[in-house]
Image 1 (cartoon, rainbow, N blue to C red):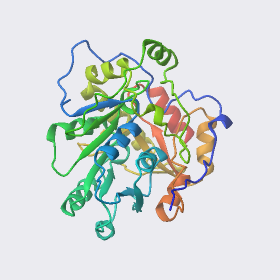
Image 2: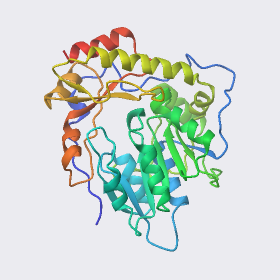
Image 3: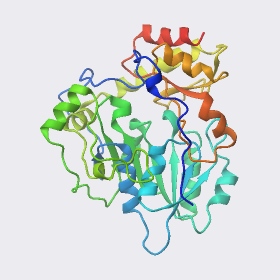
Length: 349
């Protein structure tokens, strides 16, 4: 059965331009001329993480049988569409209130027909991802780790090279504020077919802060463009990836998160999904569960670019149905000032 997505609940055109952005703008501040020592063996670069995910799906596809992938029910289309493009059957597994997954239910879904499993570390937190990875690996499934929200954790996977993980993907743009950039860890994959963008594309991206996209979305897909599958990331994005101070970025994101979490601890607008950080967490955003669905509109009207996953594969039920409307992603990135954070707190007072 073809995957269908629910319609977006809101259109960004209905709101004023955001003054507090969800992701940092491109900046060389905090980077250095010295290239950091990163485990780049078996790492390939793409224009976006969704195309890295598609490359993994194609490379790991088994020719002897129909390929079926287990994907989390809470997602954005960028997680699902690469597998539609690659010709997989898709089965969704449910999430609990903290976005972990019941291991018994998950294990039951690991049928002989399932060939691949995608495990997501939501928002820079791991939930019970490691347990799911080991369970899927023990069932002889190929595991793809989605680290789109955690470039730091991606590098840890590249360094550790865990046998249970066949591939891992992440987003350069979400962590570093580059105009584009997705990365893929996949031993045995050659990214030599990737086409380096010309200098006009590079200059347009640096000027606008966004990578120009070529081609239209494929039939039945909303955001996936086959023309971008072989596009490499911008030179500026790769430079930023190799020269950024990840330790400083992680500290600032953690500090911003802890400040917001503390200030919103008793907010009447809703609750922080993860009130505390572990030593391993490097948050992408602060997930905040609104009591009132209209809270999203109020935040956007105050020019705060909060995100929400609205376009879910249907039917949408249970926790996912609630989160589709009420779980928003508050900015905590490293470019935010204390005044920005205070404005977010005020907007949720």
